[in-house]
Structures are given as structure tokens and as C-alpha cells.
Length: 386
Ligand code: GLA
Image 1 (cartoon, rainbow, N blue to C red):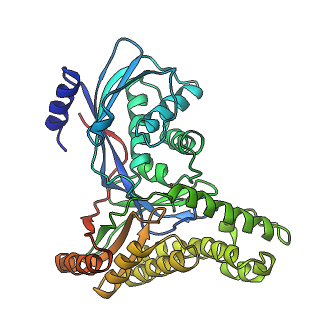
Image 2 (cartoon, rainbow, N blue to C red; image 1 turned 90 degrees about the horizontal axis):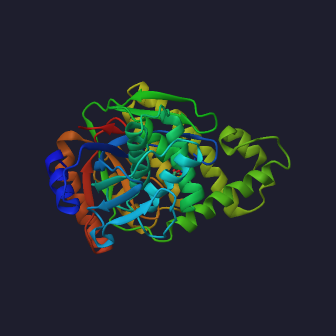
Image 3 (tube, helix red, strand yellow; image 1 turned 30 degrees about the vertical axis):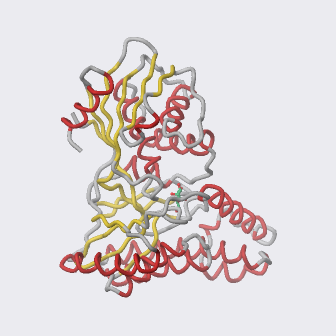
């Protein structure tokens, strides 16, 4: 995406030139999946696939939005006091940010004409929604010169998801997108929000993002269901222990207490949350020690746990990941919420072409359509780009 192509498109839609340009990344999560609403650790990073905006401030209070990705939606026009949620409409994300921005007592000084264009596959598990939220957080703070810190914007994005969109998601996506740094991943303790930036040195290896191209449909309801199952398991554990989150338990402590859960499905869900958190701690240590093989094994263990205990993978993700294992990946796992979306593989740089071809062949034979592959480049969070 270039400034000049954004300008051209902006001029076509709004018959004038834009004045400012912004970018916010998407994210991948290296390990620590479905732990962020269980008080556990996550280990995500921001990626170069993301969302761009070109804009021109207006003198009135009207906001006009247009997305190159959803041309059929046309131009949405509204004012900052007319912010209604509309299902399946991308403008709900910016509208949510405008709403909570004002609810937190920040001034909304004037309207804008804004054109947005993203290169994150929508519904692909790379946080296109958090990317849009953090993009608009950056636009609002920059355009209105409000000194709002990045963590406040991150929490605002999560509030949009929880209270406006209706997905009970954790804080990982907005945190990864909002706080990302080039070449580094973020070890975040979601219980305390303490975090550490960890350089991602992969020697001769490269992270490949593998997209199932399966759009998630029931993702949101299943996502909320998993969250409820974990809450129920925790409640049952609390009848015999004073544990406050699943992320606070070691594997041994969990084993000792498991009988109190008393339900096979709930035990599997909670076991995933507890073990995945411990795996994340181990994996970060392995990366710091340059033990990439151990890191890869822990990625694989994470996928197995998401497949069998948490049951959020599905045939498409399993096919990609199992095929990646067969074709020499040092590690591979689904990333994000699951139920479709994307997986990651750690692949030797000089093998990536053969790898992608072989995995795609397996995928097509089994699933009937092709997967997409992108090398992951780890970049910094939201930026004004011009
Ligand atoms: C989605 C949610 C995140 C997190 C992941 C699973 O991306 O938005 O908060 O729970 O799923 O790790």
C-alpha cells in the first residue's frame, strides 16, 4: 500500500485530497492461546499486514467513512452523537472507538472524511478488528492532540469489543497491535498487565503465516462459550481453593485440585488454560536461550492442547498444522481464536518455497481449496505515516 494509491482512491471517493495518513498493524500470537481471559500469559507480536487510513479533517461534526475492502457498503455518514452498533458492518469498530473516546471525557472536536484500506485477511484471525480500533485510537489522539497513553487506548479497544460488538474477548489483540515493537514479541501477564519485550531472533528460521481461508462464522458464540466454561471450572475449583484465576495455577496444583471440577469437558478446558500458560513461560525462556527446537516443540504441544482439550481448531487448521509438521516445520500451531483463521509455522529460510508448496498440496487435496501463505514481519504499533 502506498501513500499515492491511498491518495488516488481518497480523491475518487471524496473529490478532494487527503491531508494525513496512518497505519496500524495486525498481530500473530506466537504462543499462549485462550489464556488472556484466564489471567494467563500471552506472547504476541504486531505484523506488517495491517490497516491504513487517509483522512481530511472537516470543519463540521460529520464523519464520513469508506473502506476499500467493503466497497458495497459505500460511504457511511453520521455524527459523533449517532453511534449505533450495526451487525456485520465494519464501521461498528470505528464507531465504538468514537463512542468510548467520548464516554471517557475526551473531546470530539470535529468530523473527518476517512478512507480505510487493509491487507489483513478479514475474519482470518490476525486481528483485523483490533487493527481498526487501534488505528482510530491513533487518529483521535493525534488529530485532537489529546495526550492519551497507549495502554488507555488498548483498554478502550477491548471495551469496544466487550460492550459494543458483544465479543467477550481478552486484551491480547489490542495490546499486541497497540504496543508492538519491531522485531520483538510481547510477553504479557494478562492478570497484572505487566509485560516484557522479547527480541525474536530466529536464526536461519522464518515464521510463515498459513491462512486456512475459512471464514469464521460461529466463532463469536463458541468463543464466548469457551470463556464461560473456563469461568465455571474456576468457580468449581474455588469451592476447595482460594485460587483467583486459572493462570495462577501450576500444573501440579491443577492436578491436585482437578477432582473439584467434576466434569470431563470443563476439566479439558481448564487444563488447556493452565498448561498453556505454563508452556508460554517455558517457550519464552527457550527463545531467550536460543533453543528454537524446544520453542517449536512447545508450539506443537500448544496446538495439540487446542485441538484435543480446548477443541477450537477444526479440520482446516489441523490439516495445515499436521502437514506443516510432516514437511519439516520446527514448530506449527493455530494462532488467534481458532475455528478457522490462521496458523503459524517456523520454517528454515531456504526451505520456505518447498514447504509452502507441499503444505498447500496436502491442504487442497483434503479441503478442496487453497490456503494462503505470508512471511511474518514483526513491526511497531500504530503510526502516522505521512
Ligand atoms: C481472540 C481474542 C483474544 C484471545 C484470542 C485467543 O483473538 O480476541 O482476546 O482470547 O482469541 O487467544
